[in-house]
Image (cartoon, rainbow, N blue to C red; front, side):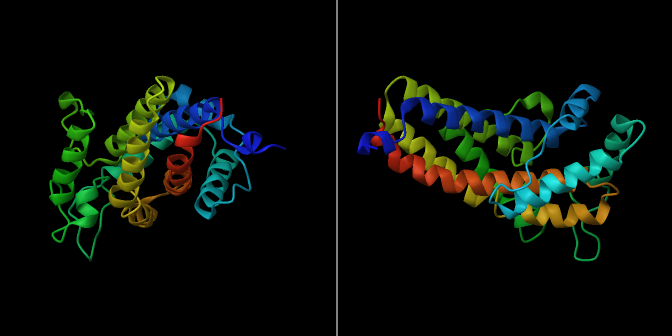
Length: 235
């Protein structure tokens, strides 16, 4: 095989970026509100892989398989209750009784409260990259769903740059993505999973949080390779 054949093609790069856009859009929707019956049935029909090479993904997929194998009855109502129990838990974050509210500030600020410094930093990231949270949603910008939606936005933007032949700006984009993942998601999503276990009655959302962690870990690693290969794209 020639050296050129070993190189990533533009088509392969776009497939990767488009897949990331879909993945992070999906995860953003999972954690923002209760799932619809249609979405749940779509997930129930998925063939979750067993060996991905990522420990968090493998654990997460196993928990999802377990949920759909043993759950019965009205899944929509069951998961709506589960969502409220885990992510809308009443009370404040303390050492004695933590709640799994999905805001970065709650897990990274000294006071463990919403609207902390991490939220301000996230807003600055969003502004710089032309991403805006819908103000009608009335949620802090460091909600996990918005941080994941930002990554979907950035992958779509990177794909558009590659399609336009602007690989240098695409490189800047993917480097920012990787830094954001490390600084504003992997720094707390594992803690969110651990606290969620204290509230969960099923394996669905704890499984999804592990899938999220694994997807972020894989993306962080892959984006490093992407930034190196973008200048060398094969036709």
